[in-house]
Image (cartoon, rainbow, N blue to C red; front, side, top):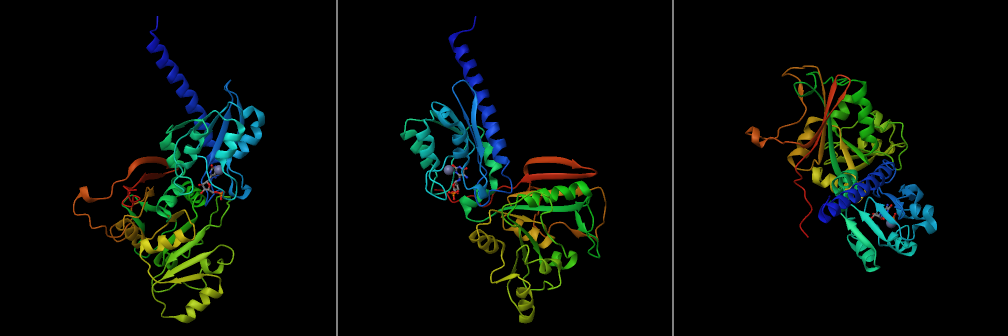
Length: 383
Ligand code: AOF
Ligand code: ZN
């Protein structure tokens, strides 16, 4: 015989696993908007009636304007009355391109809302949950918060910091070199890792490299994932002395896919004119990592993928501005005369080295991908 307490615990666990299953579904739906929601968040929503039947579901796509909750509620119609809404982010409480989702949920007669995290958008930030509670709706916040944070890591960071989330990506040899002495860097990793790079490019708003890499590799830096995206991938070059060649692939394609060059000085005004004639935007001024990120933030770019070279990687790491890093490691050995993946970081002891956490390791053919997070030196200021 089970005691009453045991029975009620069992019930809570069952309820919990049901909630988890539906929240998992809401998060998976949200993820279907990858590459298609920026500058908005990824949001998924499902409406479940009192018998546990899914009566509506939806996810947000920027171009379709409607929020996830509205799509799910429209599908559910009258069946939303008394139902539970599982949504991957706090419902909005403001008039933006659409009226508030809170109003729609209240009007539809939703009885309970389960959401993992608060929306840090200052127009929402707790107001969504408060409005729902004031209308007598049961609100539960926190279920699968970690997954929800990860899913929207770009949006959440951008909303809190007003500058893009930074993901550093490098491909190196077993001995940590990104090129031979002559500067040859093609191709360190194989097909599989290169396809994965396009997946990474696909989920970012911008891609950034240093002038050294631009001159040495003449890269195109486009998203060739084959997947549709809502905004073009903005290509950014940090080019202190404005050395980028007007005949480079970047310059030649700047009308089709934007290129922004950050330079400190411009000794050669003819070069500047040539680059601008090709459609490149030249921004003259402070080229420090923070200044560049703040400028990209003003353009509502939520995320930037840094693809090298070692100077740029070192600068951003030293500034504590890298949020996440992916290293693709190929089974080749280049030797001490090769170019190190990352510039000087001034670590005296192993303890001073930068250590990634929440590390995930994957294999792509013979290459290994190591992805992890950096201790955020750039936490939002305490409220
Ligand atoms: C939700 N559900 O599906 C989304 C939300 O310009 P708007 O009107 O689309 O508003 C954008 C803001 O609304 C965005 O910054 C975020 O705070 C919220 N997005 N909210 O309840 C959704 N996409
Ligand atoms: Zn909304």
